[in-house]
Length: 200
Image (cartoon, rainbow, N blue to C red):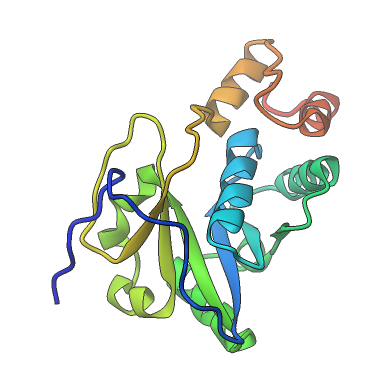
């Protein structure tokens, strides 16, 4: 059945569906190398906007152990109770989003999962492994990113957030060039990067 084309300009009201006894948790996959304030803003605001229990950050497998430590430092610095870290993807090589969601559902049958996507990934939903099955297992949530204006025919909730043009690749580039990317990421994460000599 075709779906109406949803774009970042589709107006979506805050989540008003009646709550049942099921828990509702957000999934936010990424390399987080390093985690920055844009990631944290998305996780926190989507959590509040959709009234989720929490949002879990899933660092991908190719991420180093430094990534996990930087995520821990970021959450400690901001004392985020509504954001957590899950290492399912980090510890399982070759895991796809489909397999990750399937695993989470099997382990948590009382939870409805909301899969958060940046605008840059929304346009690639058709390339997700077993996307037709995945859309039946999880609610996709799209978040705008500067420079990306894409739509999709897959069912998706758009959440309007302040856009921050921050990327991990830009932060790595700044550090490599000897600049300090102040205000783009948590201070504790920047201190860790400099102490460990990452991205030199």
